[in-house]
Image (tube, rainbow, N blue to C red; front, top):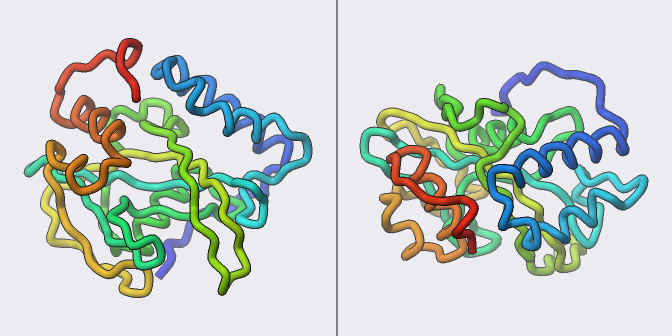
Length: 213
């Protein structure tokens, strides 16, 4: 069941793109070595009159996802995505009236069940993600979708105890809690993000300016 988010007027296309450009600029002050990696996203946001929220916008559009870490066991929630046949964090497309973080929290609720997850204190700026990733989504002939890019904004939530998961079996085949140290063994695509999560949750020091993949 979807949470009853407070509805607000839908920002205009240009207004929303400007907001996201500001978020990306602030993100790059924390992770400046990722600027080249995000060049495709930056180019997308600079295109006039393009609704980057819409899944119909090609060759790419925005998505949002949730990293949920159990602070007791230092484990990350991953679900086995049926469509992509991969272990991933909960996430998906945006609704028109949502912020990126609201979309991440809604997708978490829809895919893993309702639980009072807390936003991690890393997000002093509630709109600022802890990670942004661009990845290629394969074509889906049944939906008449060509291959395209997801520009994924990722937010960190924390829980104490992980017996609350009520998996949506239409979306996921299974779920598991993976130690942060082992995330890259399960899915190499999350290696960079896992380092950020360890830094935020476990307190492992790392230099954002010297080392990003």
